[in-house]
Length: 182
Image (cartoon, rainbow, N blue to C red; front, side, top):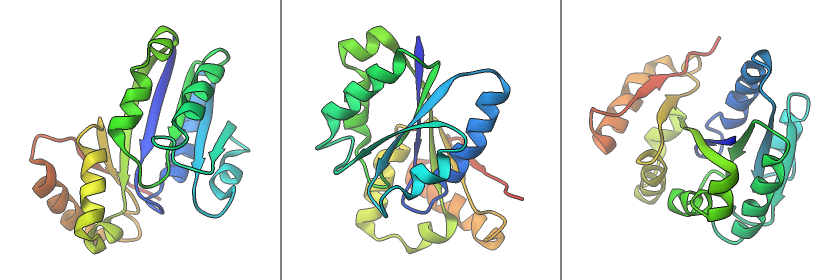
């Protein structure tokens, strides 16, 4: 069965960069995969960054958890026929509950299993988030498996503050790790 991996986070958090590294890791283990890219920003930027490391299926014109939910569902089923894994990069602001509803459909459950769920957080952006943005981020964080703090090489002084904010939001029992970059 095909595993469905989710790499979430706000715009600019480092999702695409992480997926490039993850793609290389998957390739090194002989795991076939495709990436579903939900483009909301500049048309095709993230897909272009991934095209040399992965098969990229773009979904644009709406969010995969809302207006594009049916297209997303159908694309997963299509890719599940050919790949061991489908890596999903949603838009920066999406609803985790709606994503989980798609994975809970009988057709998806028949062909796929949930894989990893990673949320990437930019420590500099985290400090600047409004209450509304923190609420959206919280909805992603409470259902994720691993939280990675990106850009630690750019903002080493902000990493501890980011961890403190995340612990205040979620409690101490969450798996929060700095993602060290060279």
